[in-house]
Image (cartoon, one colour):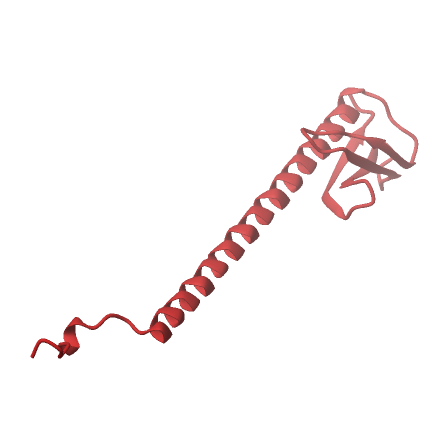
Length: 125
């Protein structure tokens, strides 16, 4: 009986090991992809948040200047954190002569709009 191997004492075959490694490899690849997508989502959210702050800052600046700017469009850099953002503002007349409508769009240079804000400016004290 010394030459017989008990079936329960046998190891895995090479095919079984390769199949298990392939399954583990696919699972790890899916995990790495999910982590990458999560990191991209966090970066995009950070860009949108900083753009929103830049737009709010620009609206606050316009209100604090206590001026009544002429209608038109202007563009100026409005960096925020590590981002070189650009604020494009459009000022137009409203139905009331004491108010002007303001739209501020914030984007990266040659990039899509990350934030858009609307507000009013007044000549009233």
